Every structure is written in C-alpha cells, then in structure tokens.
Image (cartoon, rainbow, N blue to C red; front, side, top):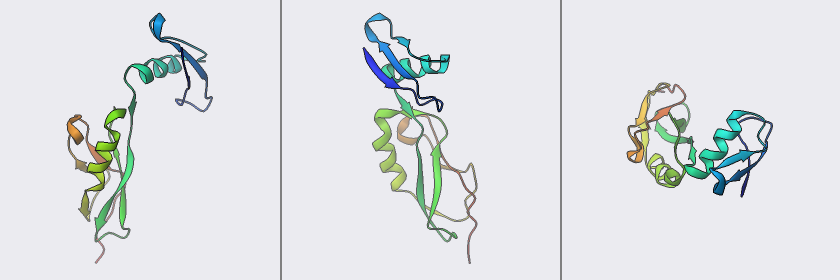
Length: 118
C-alpha cells in the first residue's frame, strides 16, 4: 500500500493507494484525489515552470512553462533543453519557445511579454 499527500488542492488529503486491489484510493475527500493517487503511481506527470535567458529585454530572464503535463521521468532532460535556450526580445505571452520538447508532443511557451530595450 502506497501513501501520498494529495497536492491537487490545499486540503492535503492523506491518500492510501492499494496497488494490489486495482489502485483503490482511500483517504481522499473528492474525486480529484482519487484521480491524482492513481495517476501518481501509474504514470506520474508534472508541469514545468522555469526561465530562459533573453537578450535585449528589460530583464535577463523570461518565465516559460510547458503547456501541458509531461512525464515526470523526462523532467531533467526537458530542463536541460530549456536551459540551453537563449531568446532575443521581443517575446510575447504564448510564443512557442520550444516545440515538441523532448519528443513529448508538448510545447514550452513564454509566460510574459518582454519588449526589446534599445
């Protein structure tokens, strides 16, 4: 039996997941906890938020994120890819920074407008 603390909402339910009984989840106060508990053991995923270097902007870095969840096992590989990117201003919210990051089918996008500074 696996034990997790649910991170879907602020309640932090203490989940018990019985892998030998079809991943039955107990301890959850809502169905989101049930879904989270199963997924965390079967196929854990995460959304990555990070920053990239940017030239000619009013700040040296710009926030970026994956547009959807990626497999947890690919986080280090994806972070290495993000850390190699250096952008040139201007960049706008939603601009694709990395398309199909690490062959996941998921894009990395900008989360902030950054105009070019003269």
